Image (cartoon, rainbow, N blue to C red; front, side, top):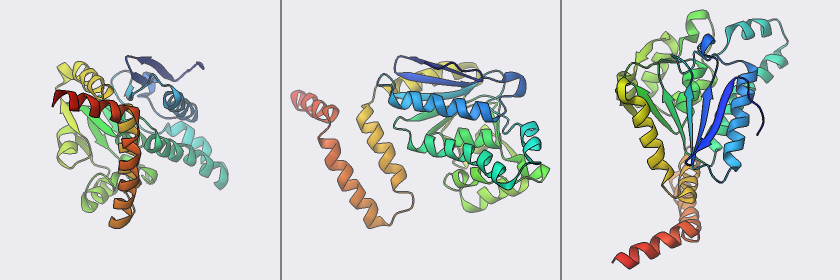
Length: 255
């Protein structure tokens, strides 16, 4: 396994743990951290022992967004250098969407800007009661650009634009109400409940989960008939998997 400097990576009981590990910087994203997150995702994607990926942040916050010192340095660079830097984060979001395993974001503290993007790019978002979410880029004259593609798919158009245009920071309960996240968990029981959630998901068929995730996101931009056609293909493929055949046999024996 490759060494990591700004990310902690481990696998236990079917769960790959990716922990953003710059607590002194509120886990702000610099180029090295993004590269390491992508490397950890790649490792977990090919590890047959992994059934679920869990992303969290070390310390008090999930992730405060981009490291502004690094962005300030790049502001003196060329357009192409800045495009390449931005693309690294965009590619991370794509790799999360295309990852064969379900990805859970466990959010304590603040998930802001690109950090909020990473959280909501996950397939499931579990938040501690005291967690906060937001896209404050507008307050420094920046644009919450790539995260916009994720937010628009999570909440209503009007609410999404309001969050992006005002830079409002919202509590976990509000994020739940508008559909940005899946669950809010009391701070005192957060770690245990996250482990239980991940553990239960890890007991599901890995092939069925992979096919379900792939089909679900494939339907994002296709017409109804094309979505049904993709469903037919996935349905037929699922029947041929070992997990499905074993599951049917178990069911028939109980009948």
